[in-house]
Amino acid sequence: MPDRSVLSIGGADRVSFLQGLVTNDVAKADGSIIYTALLTPQGKFIADFFVLGQKDRLLLDVATSHTQVLGQRLMMYRLRADVSIEPTDTVVSRGTGEMPDGGFADPRHPALGWRAYGDSNISDATDWDAIRVANLIPATGIELTDDTYVLEAGFEALNGVDFKKGCFVGQEIVARMKHKTTLKKGIARVQITGKANAGDAITAAGKPVGTLHTVSDDTGLAYLRFDRAEGEMQAGDATLTRIT
Image 1 (tube, rainbow, N blue to C red):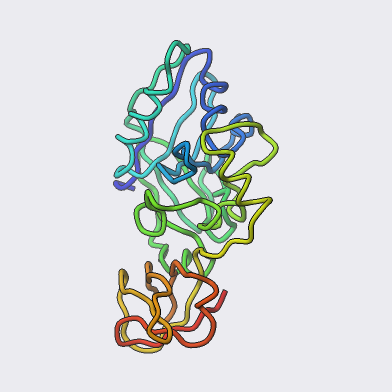
Image 2: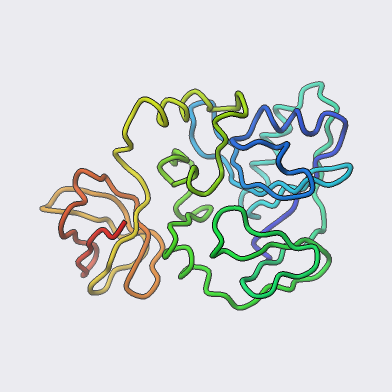
């Protein structure tokens, strides 16, 4: 997967350091992988990634497009902690067939198969966009941008947030959205009749509703204002209806 990079976090404080920053419980990554994100203090998305706990380090599997920003932000928080942050040559593979030795089930959803880490790529030819659209799985840089609130992107359903782990950066905003409000916007599946493209604005009765993101055949993922997403909507030359 050339679009993925792996950072290594070493040092005696590596677990406690990352635990205080990210949305999920890093202790659960001991010999396994978790899905998590780093947020701004205002609760906005910076990067999502997987954490694999090994004997003397944590491996962070992150989109290559977001490796630099993640590394820089972690360095900013390091202060005097006994932590090292380094790039690695680890290769990320994924697939939906038989899991290879040393592979891990993708923690977000069973349909996403497995992930593996090593020296060579053993990924298969799965249509990942089709799986993401069918199961409401957002992707870095597409549905997940620096304007994203992770609960609007379905992070709780994707096992990406642990509300019992204690504080993390942006935790107050995430907790408030969880306990004190009903989400008024978010990622949803839409049925597409006609021609529409990723990035098209979505309207209903002439009012803005949201934006179409990933398209797979006649369905797609869209960021919607839910109170305006009832009935027929328009995007490009297509008619859209919300499925979920």
